[in-house]
Length: 296
Image 1: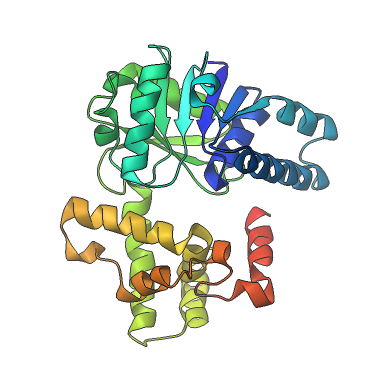
Image 2: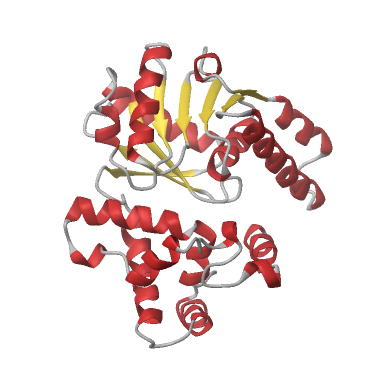
């Protein structure tokens, strides 16, 4: 495997492109507009600058990494000669199904199609293609260049060969791949999202305040970041989307999103990316501090 195409230049997509490019792969980064691609490349450049400043890489390493990435607004052009395509678009089922139908049509028949979904069924995505045995989940953690875990999710039809290839490929990136089966939320979010949701319920019921809840989990449970702060970092809209997928998949009320989370998303309070969530980032600039702390 030498050529990797990444669909989506947002937070996860640019992180995935950065990680592959830094490991020596040729990467085709694809998004719908030049502006989106430029923002993605600017983010990669800034993250590389931080690594240079910390003496983790050299200026030559940075230049080589950036040189390994090409950008495209055409999916058909971007996936030419790709050995692997990693889709990292918005966590929306209809959008992902549309993307995978197109990828199946324009990619080489031997190309492996992976999705970075954090909750949506790999089996359902694979079903819209003519190559379900070559469809797999690669759930990277945010921030991708730093976090070691990659959840490798086997769909119902994913072949042993493809699973083995992706497991080994993840190791070449310096990651720790963990194989899991295709059920709503997989492992990471099946455990994490109920904890975040219960933390929001605890706030909603007036048991304690935001900082108090986070302090208990950080100091009492040795979590590096409190659950409400983490929800802001992930994006409250993303948390809501994942909980809805799990609730629909399991039909179990324990996965039902807290009304406070629903209302905050409807009000546009999405966390760091909107400037306000459980914490106010716009006034205090905590967003920048949180990101720097997390990336240390």
